Length: 376
Image (cartoon, rainbow, N blue to C red):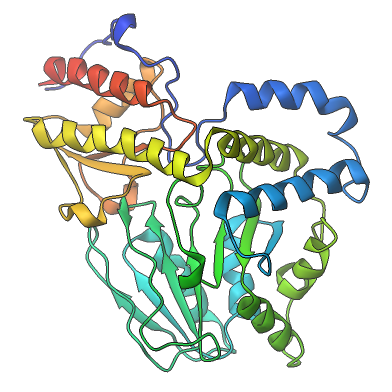
């Protein structure tokens, strides 16, 4: 039905915090308050001094603890987010040819970056319909580009190194932007696990972080020594050298680093990645069960094995406009649950990152139930 007047959701149904966006995502109040407390001696200070370098070191060590990576792995970071890292990878990680699994908007963008790179051979691009996912295929490429969780569609895939592919032949790089911190992974199956912190790490964007294996470090150094021209801002060897000194090549956003550190340390205190992934599973399971049992909703991803535990996509009955539902939620303080526009479906999309309280997810479905009855 067409809505002619505003609808007020009863306060008792509303979540305590209405931020459910898939990125930028909810930033915990405790982190913001903590940042304010240390701001005078931290914000607006040189990133080459110990106060900031110490914070970067806390980020690197906390991330290594959270992921339980081997001691010979390294945590690199730089400015620009995962989008910039795609460009950096085309210069500094791919020797000649890559293979990409494309099953949504973000996995597509990396494949296009390599396709447009004049110094690389055209990539192999394996695609599938939105809501499903392809599998990597052993090939003669030297770089496999996987996406653990496709934020646009709510599809998650297992991270498995292609059969009979050694790190001497090819490395496996994973875009983990919406997965890192909310999904388990095995470092034995991956060489480069990169992401931005504005999702499970409850921070702001503009930073990329990459957990790199020795094989990945070797690849960075080999390409750097090959004579290939690489812009300094995209040079992973420069990023590596600076990261080893607990720095970034150019000035980072100090608040982003601090908020990331606060979230990492909070998650480690709660029980690490096992705890965080379990919390995400609790919230996402509630949403999927709600959608499966609802007369006017259903999970977009039909294959339960591919359903994301951190970004849940739900199709809404065409009798109800998802746009109207989302707009009415926003008027009531429930924010950013719209589907990804380029998917083109009557859909909502809800993040279930660790910072989001499972009880608020339950309150969200109660609120949507209330609205749906009035919008029919």
